[in-house]
Amino acid sequence: MSAAPDAVVLAGLFGLGRVRGPLAFVARGQSNPLGVWRLHGEGGRCAVKWYARRPDARALRIEIAAFEAGVPMARPLATPDGAYAPPIRIGRNEVFARIWEWVEGDAFEWHTVEPSVSGRVGGLMAAVHRVTPPAVAPEPPSAAPTKSDWRHWAERAQQCALPWARAALRALPALNAHAAFAREARADMPLVLSQRDYHPPNVIAQPDGSLALIDWDAAGLADANADVAQYAFVWASDEDGAVDTDAVRAFVAAYRDAGGRLRQPAVRDFAPASASLLQWIAQNILRDLDDAVAGDPELTLALLEGVRAPDRTELARRVTLLRAA
Image 1 (cartoon, rainbow, N blue to C red):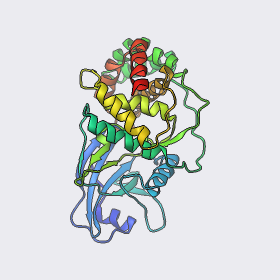
Image 2 (image 1 turned 180 degrees about the vertical axis):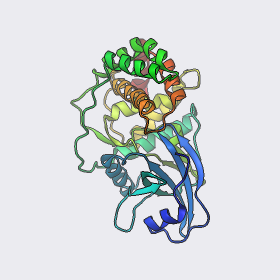
Image 3 (image 1 turned 30 degrees about the vertical axis):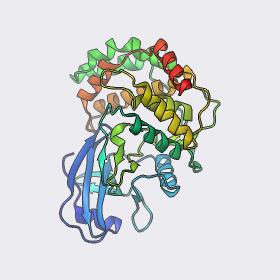
Image 4 (image 1 turned 90 degrees about the vertical axis):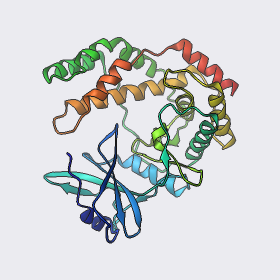
């Protein structure tokens, strides 16, 4: 779907008044193939996203709770009757629209490694974790794909001439190793409110020097230790995977100083990241195989070619770094 909804119709739906020109395309993220657009209305600029499927209601409630608690982020906007994701038509397709006040600034690049930045992101994560979660329906358990699932998808990919069919078969040992490790995640710990996608492109450095966290589509509840274990290293690893220990220390120290809830780290704290990786790969595979949704086979190919079995020796080394921070 390449067309954009009419800016006037969209502004009228959300009660934004007059618009100053058509929607302007901004970016297309890995999880939002329909893109992010900018709307310039009477009250200022807004960010617009629309979705082929209705956004998750739990994630939306958690996002609103975080904003109301004062987490630095984009303000979500609703229609006059209180709908945050109303349906709208683009040609023959019905999609769901969301709008936020525009956040000025620049997103961080992947593999940003700078202790001062890492520390600030750790403090931002702590601010999210301190928010009292709203009452939401329990998240339905998501079963990890089985070996037969991956093989079935690979066979369908071959029938559809998708480029990742063979890569899916080659990746089977690594995928199964991640599935086994994911089952080690702790299920007996209290969960905290989490944005669950604290990657560099989702953190905006604003002109006044403050940070803002955007893209709450995956928001939910998470084990605080798992969030810290995963993202302390995301913000400390360069393109070659080398880890800056000062950046790890800065992240953890700032997280604790800002009131974050961190238990004694353990290797199993990395298990939820394996579950998330499998879900992300499966989501892209199924999107590629769905004729009604625009997929990205090259992204799926890169994910499958890049997946490696969990390295417990490296994870143990990372636990030592977290404990020393």
